[in-house]
Length: 386
Ligand SMILES: [Ca+2]
Ligand SMILES: [Ca+2]
Ligand SMILES: [Ca+2]
Image 1 (cartoon, rainbow, N blue to C red):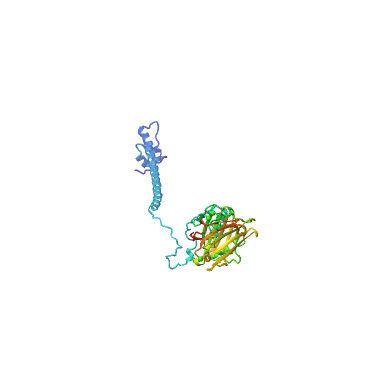
Image 2 (cartoon, rainbow, N blue to C red; image 1 turned 90 degrees about the vertical axis):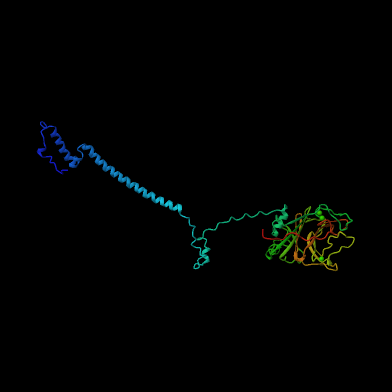
């Protein structure tokens, strides 16, 4: 390349168009090319000056675009590579269980037990749903349910023992007689046998702090003997009879005696022996009895407690007994401590107030009063507030 500069003002470069031949014109065009595009371009583009010039610029653009694209691609690769590495890390990373930084059970230095008990710093304990309380059961008799609930017993408890008694099986205290007073409020239809097991707190709550208050009339009648003492804790026998008709509360024509009788010591020496001709004497073979009486003349309920001696003497006894009267039910609540094993019989008796042979009738648990007393076999139930 010449590097030669062309002077456009040089008169030598001017030609006379009238005389200039093709060679002169060519020389002139060459000079202009050099002026506009330089010697290099002239050298390189002598075959196709303008096309090659555009090609050179185009190449520069292409190179620039390629470089830009390469940079963009590299950038994308770098960015994508970071994402890939992150996801790869995630893929291969083994999850680490959360560390309880407050757990000092293995840290001999930090032995502050209070810190472990801080619910705000520990993972929350899974909350166990409160079990739904079992709905109370029922005996099918709302009045009996009410008494059982007051005693702290679920009326649906399967340990309650219900024993049927024959209907219309009244008798007289002389087996040869036909009863002369026959009434549904004497006829026992069902027996209830429950053994309550009561803590000091429970006997206090139920018997000695007014839940089953002596003298109460609502929601059921509670009858106690004169000089009644506090119910001791331990087992309490709840022995009931369900009559065919409601108990005669308020009856003005007839008197009644409902009784629970026991062999209180298992010793036959003091058991009551009937006097002839009363071979169906209701209390035979028992040495202690609890008599709940309705007096139609006094219009009162009362309980007397009697103990038989070895000489067949009958003496009043101090007791914690309660009797509940409600609807068709008469229920005796007798502390086990007063009756030993508690071999028992329940009796019902209606009379005219004078035990007249012409106006009396009775029923007993079981077929007749010559049958042996029966020991309660119900499984004890721990009472609780309900
Ligand atoms: Ca009966
Ligand atoms: Ca005895
Ligand atoms: Ca009977």
